[in-house]
Length: 515
Figure: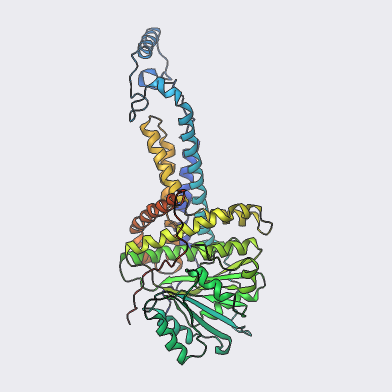
């Protein structure tokens, strides 16, 4: 299959620097200007501002001064007018003083939220500029001749009759010594013809050894945990059933494991059904920003590239040393990433190791997918944030990047809370236009999952497909949908009375590819 991102390795021409720098520099300078000159301290309710109460800087005569003093005294002695300070709630000036601590708390909380959003803004710009102009790390790219070790390829599957045959056909034809490769598709209680298809392939190709599960804990993590514990091969690659690996992908994913520090490796995910509709095109842009820019920048800067659970693999001894796969996590990939990191292992990202997937082609499926990712990611955040801060195996920057990566989904409810606070304070009469402007600029620049608008544009440029940037305005719709979906599931996780249903298969619906 021909790569649709053939321009991924294209460098940056000197003439293009002028086009890349203004946007992030303008945004940061605007925020700095507002912080310095347009965000004064909170004015107490005892100081009432009005046109009559403000003294001009010009020289006035004695008569004008006496008239001004008389008008000011009359203004201050006026009958108390309700809705002067809190027009939305009808709270008087006297009552406002009793809520002074609450208003202060809301303002400080808004400052904190804006500070967090600014940190993510700087993080995204830092990654993008590094990707455009920094030194790129592809340490395992040229390793294509070696004594290739035995490798086991695991394919968890649940009701995948539409696509399972395609990945098995692709794996049979990959460029890797056949005697060193075992393919284990795992049929976990499928109710369709998945099992029959696997048995048919196994009858024709001895290296395909399917496993049929009829009991035990459900879910991808449980499937991988059960099978991995029975394996003897040190390198285990994992693919989802709807993915199509390229011919040279297996060698590219195995190559980093010659480095004894590497515990896991991740390749790049590329949507194969881009042309289906507008949603698939938007998800293609989001994936490009997340992998081409975000993941590769973290690889460049020796930070925390994330193992994504598919199009990648793990070193079996490394994973077992930190407890193996988690069968109780909705994000077994993120969970494995952080346990390996805490155990002193590194994750390598191979940007040019592309594998093709089917992205959701309808909004209900997309919302379910992003909600599941957010829920699992937040679980991992609660489990490992403290351990990451205390870890002796990670550098300061790995800790910082790891914490920001863990909190990326929680920024959706945090950002919405910031807007609620800003609008509420506005209607309460606490006018902070500078803060609202900063929140607007940073929200626009930070909105998304791992890919912001600027990262998406840079990724399209690096891929050599600039025409895709024309879809940028539509991405806002997708990001807003994700914002509310992630906020909903995050707030639901905070409810203490939720019933635990355990981990089950959360399957993204797939269709048979045409052609």
